[in-house]
Length: 130
Image 1 (cartoon, rainbow, N blue to C red):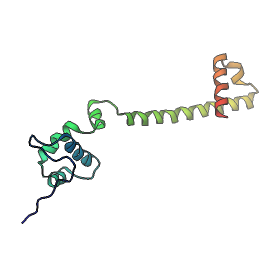
Image 2 (cartoon, helix red, strand yellow):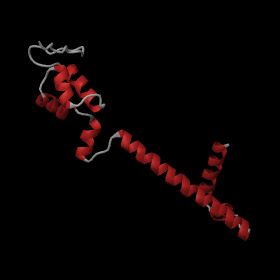
Image 3 (cartoon, rainbow, N blue to C red):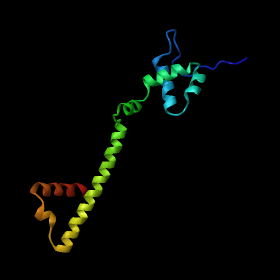
Image 4 (cartoon, helix red, strand yellow):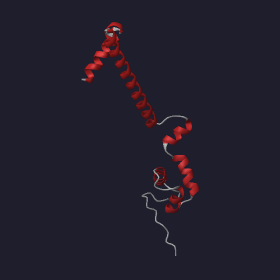
């Protein structure tokens, strides 16, 4: 005789259907790669179609945002970090260029050609970096 598998999640199905917590727990395990839809259907004794509906309804926000063309907070953070690295590299190149001009031509570019506001910003940056 085949022994029926027990439902191991805390929320068992009710007379009206499966509870929200039960559905979310299954979807999280599928999204984390712990189970496939087929494995979940067998393990929790529910249909593949039901799990697919739950996945479509309760799936991860990142996936839904991609489908709508938006960006998740994690994607936005990665883009901003990349942009920050590029700006730091550009800043480093400009600083080197100013040093080379000063050494080659004896002209202090920062003092002569920068506005008062730009000079004050540079002073603040130097103070903060020390």
